[in-house]
Image 1: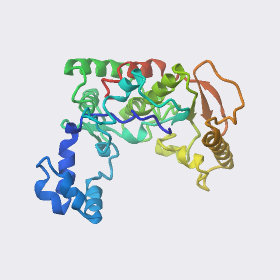
Image 2: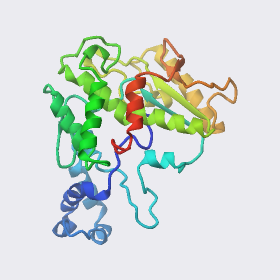
Image 3: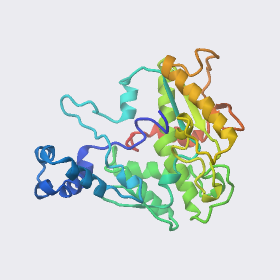
Image 4: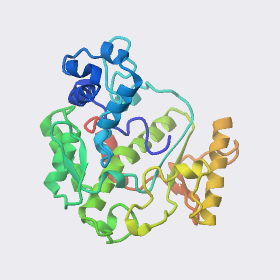
Length: 324
């Protein structure tokens, strides 16, 4: 599993995103008249492929990744449902497949979500902006994203306040990590936002899954992909999905020979895992501590899985508040 785990995307009851569903159906020409009827499936089944594809494309917000996250699995407690509860609760109950896995993240997962955010207080989606994001605006965005609250509104507000307190408004400790006070011509707040959103959506989910598997005696292999990417002046760091071309041997020609070599190493690990469920060709030693493989062309090594320990532990402890 690359970049997080199954609970990376917040999960809600279907009713929460009903207005997005209605907006989609409204764009299907033959079904537009019944978009708010609450009974649209029969019509959509009879719509042609062109209608459906056109409506879906018109529903996508091209310049805003987060706004498209309404097209996600929804909790359904009805008879025969396969997705009946939050992923964190299912894990706690032991309701998961006990299969070995490779699971990891890139260094700067949250950047593509965090070039400033604004909240749509009805749906809680996040909108791209290059304005400076004030604390209250970030809090409002997080509250909207995690509404309706699982516990209570007051509990959610307290949790968000505590979360923000764990991430100082200091660019030198934000994402892209290791870049000091440079904000690359963007609002100073974006590095803090990127750190928060990356941990919420990806790093906490990955660590939670790794720990649950390990506690249950299932082999799990974790990684952190940190290989520097071209054009660092853009401030994208080692962004979400950066490792995928390496895994498939599709590193662009403009990359260095060292990155090409790293790609070959990663392919070997992934192919070995696909064959034997062990990326190490069943060699090596079993680590009793929590470690990750760091994939970086100049520093491929075993590292402790304890970066941002306090922050990520807090997110995991309050996973239900964040709809994970």
